[in-house]
Image (cartoon, rainbow, N blue to C red):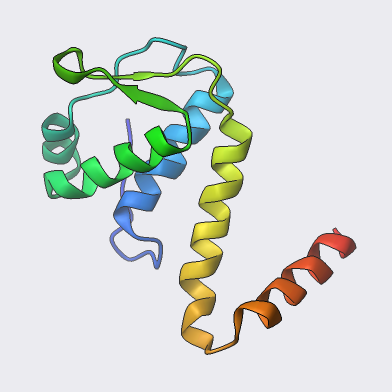
Length: 118
């Protein structure tokens, strides 16, 4: 069961991506598992279908799921959940820091420094 925190700074579509990527990475959702339909998940979470569709599109671009037309959306074989989780964290970071007005090079320098200290 997924939940959406409406008070979070993280957009709902990103929360869906994060939760599904984590479930795929953990093996909770196995290769070939069919995801809830866009309309079904939207109704379940109280979101617009476009929000869920955006999440599924991002997960497909990350190679975690594949759209199968009328057969629905399924967990892809060989998906790299680790990369998807990193991409989700990077997107969350970008959403938060873009408001600060720093340039890309400055932000990359900050990230590099943080990675070196990790």
